[in-house]
Image (cartoon, rainbow, N blue to C red; front, side, top):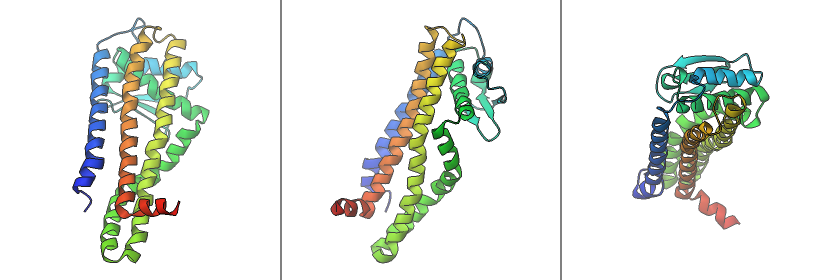
Length: 239
């Protein structure tokens, strides 16, 4: 019922195209600047440490993690984990990614509201992302047999999926702000020159597109299920 032609054309195909293009752009941009060094010749880990120290953040651990582009900041234990192509690398790409993650540590240290909101939504999103689809499928099946029983189940499924949508939307200002902090701090701390920050900025802008694509795809999916269940039409008729 869910994977009909309408779903394929309205949601899955556009979502796959957006995600694919964003992912391709990230890999292409990262690879381009992965071989370009900087005047300071710092590693990603050194750049992140300097950026944090210049901002007065001294309680953040920095450690390597396996994988490629698996970099992230964990606010639970104040740990910045940098992937192997970033931690010890001395490229513009490595420094851009490392300083972006350091930007999240700065958000945590300064109590950035959107980061706090996203952190609180993590446990809810973990549950909703697993439960929303099964609940929606059961609800849609029930609606075709007994609308009175199916409607509340569909509403529950929509609410669960909406939580994941809210998480993806809140992620956008969190990621954008972290990159903005990184671009400013990289120059102010002398990590890169004015010319070099342009390349690092392109890496960060490309990475942001992946979050934007994910948010758009999740919103499209939510609208589809609202339309498919008739809830969107019912809402519009009340206006």
